Image 1 (tube, rainbow over the protein chains, first blue to last red):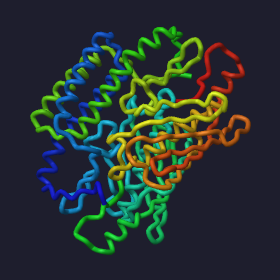
Image 2: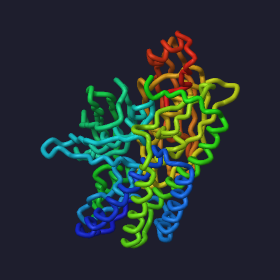
Image 3: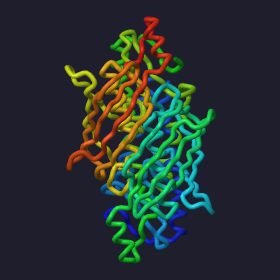
Image 4: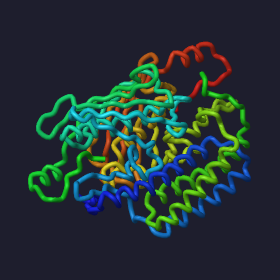
Amino acid sequence: MAGYVRDDLPETEVQRQRDLYGPFTQSLRELVDAGLRTLVDDEEIRAAQAEVEAITARLRARQLEGAYGVRFSAEGRGRPWGNTVVGLRNAVAPPLRIEHHPDRDGRVWSDFHLGAVYEGPPGLVHGGVSALLLDQLLGESAGAGGRPGMTATLTLSYRQGTPLGDLRGEAWIERSEDHKTWCRGHLVGPDGVTVEAEGLFILPRWARERIASEQPHPTPRYFE
Amino acid sequence: MAGYVRDDLPETEVQRQRDLYGPFTQSLRELVDAGLRTLVDDEEIRAAQAEVEAITARLRARQLEGAYGVRFSAEGRGRPWGNTVVGLRNAVAPPLRIEHHPDRDGRVWSDFHLGAVYEGPPGLVHGGVSALLLDQLLGESAGAGGRPGMTATLTLSYRQGTPLGDLRGEAWIERSEDHKTWCRGHLVGPDGVTVEAEGLFILPRWARERIASEQPHPTPRYFE
C-alpha cells in the first residue's frame, strides 16, 4: 500500500538516524513549549520568529514531498516516525513510548508526561488528546496481539479530569473474531483512572490479501 | 476555577497580542513540519538543533510557570490560546478556526488543513486526531448553543480513511436536558463524510454554581 515503504535500512543506519533525529526533534518540542509559555518582550519574540523562519528555510532546501509515511526494514519492523502520537521525528507527538508485555499478547502500556501544549480545560489534558493517545494505545494492543487493524469505532468515557503531568496509559485485547478485534484501555493519573476507552479494530482488505499472498513485503504490525 | 483567569485586557491589547503571537506561533508550526520532512544532511540538522536550543533558552528567560489556561476579558470572551486544537499560541494546534452559525444556535463548523504532523496510517489523518478535533467541535457546539459542558462520553465511527489536506468539520446539538447536552458532528473529506461523532457534554457543578450566584466573573462559553 502506498506509504508503507520498505527501504531495507540496516539496523545500524536506523540507530544512527534515531541518534540524529531524536534529540533534534526533542529540541523542537522544547521550543514549541517555550513559545507558548514565554513572557519575554515583543522585540525578543520578533527576533526569535525571524531566526525560526531562517532555520525553516534551510531545512526545506531538501525535504520529502508529502508526509513521512511508515518505513519498514527487512525484518518488517515499522518506523512510524511521522506518527502524531509516537513519531520520533514528529514534534507534535509527546512522543509515547509504548511497551509490549513480553508474555501477554495484546497487553501494552506507556508512562509519559504531557505538558502545556496538550491543555484543554485549564490545567487539564484536552479530552480529545486523551482520545488521541488511547486510539494509538488500543491500536497497538491489537497489533501486539497479532491482530492488527484500523480503528472502526472508538468510545471514550471520561471519569474525571486528567491533570497535565506524568500519566500512564494501558490497553489490552478484549476479544477477537475473524479480522475484527475489540480492545479496551484507560489513562491513569495521580487519582486513578481518568478516561476509559473501548474500540473495534478491523484488518483492512489490502492487508488481508497481502498476508494471504505471503509476499515478502512486510505487513505492518499495527496501523500507525 | 483555577486556570480561568479574568485579566480584563482591553480588546485593543488582545488584538495587539494576536498580531504578535499569531505569526510567531505559525512560524513554529512551519519549523515543526520542516523538521519532520527535511532531507538535509546531518551537519545541517545539528546546526539547526543548536540554534533552536539557543532560541528556546532566550524565550525561557521569562515564562509562565505552568500551562496557559484560559484568560477572560471583561466581556467574558475566552482566550484559550494554549488549547491543543484552537490555541493561537500553541504550535501543536492546526489551529482550527471554528465558526458559529449566526442564527442557528449550536451549529458550528470549521474548514482547515491538516499536514504531515497529523499523520497516522500513511497519507491519512491519525484516527485519534480526528477524535481530538471532533471533541473540540462538539464541545464548542454545546457552548454555542448556550449549553456549555465538559466531555462525559465521546463515540467515534470511522467510515473511511481521512486523507491529509483540506478538510471540513461540523457539529450541532442533538438534544439537551438539564445540564446535559448531546451533540453530533463529523469530518468531511474530498469523498464525503469520513468520521462521525456523538458526545455527551455536562456542565460541571462549579460552573452551575457560578451561574446561579450570578457573580460578575464570566462563565466560560465552552470548556476548551
